[in-house]
Image (cartoon, rainbow, N blue to C red; front, side):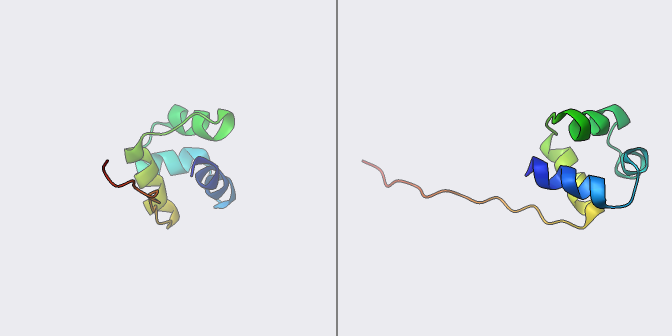
Length: 67
């Protein structure tokens, strides 16, 4: 998920500064996320997805039945 978001940020045509300003994500947090691979909180991931027009889906694994 993080790699998809990084690629979307880098190819969206906006600067990291502008994305940070428009999403409310701290600029240094945005820069660390893109440049060094640092993670983002789920709240910030949601904000980026909305801004970039992406839908975040959680894939759930198979569950085991009780013993």
